[in-house]
Length: 207
Image (cartoon, rainbow, N blue to C red; front, side, top):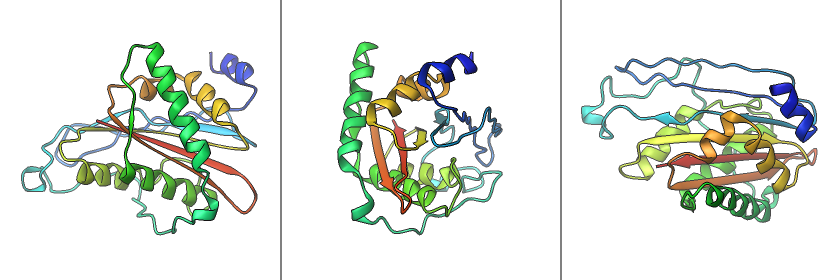
């Protein structure tokens, strides 16, 4: 199945599924990969349910934890390295796809967009490898910035890809498509270009 999808979109693909451990809750985390990324790649987490109350005073253990070391992004977002046109195109294409599934459009959220851009920048500058490092931080940030939010998902990609190629790649991957078809309300998309002229893409989803 995965090899067939690779042939369809013409790229080698990385699939990543993440399940986070929330202190005091029965959850587990696993990361799986298949194939190898060369000039282009994709990665996506499943949506992450928040199973404890939002307020820290009633949250078991008081913190959200992850088995891997949590990376707090520090790389500044450099305006010249952004690709807002691609971000808008991806949002439009994702919402067009959701419409075919009779799902409401996602609304852009500035706080989520900022975190998506920072993660793309961190991957592009190789501060973190291509993947979901620091996802716990981004999830907690979204929970803090969007009162009442309960679930977060994330899709990523890299390479010299058009918005259509990125979205098509995500649609052809069950892990990414699950996020795109999720019962989400908000999104934030970050596309940055590094010194090697390579594009990195991050889309966050939340409800």
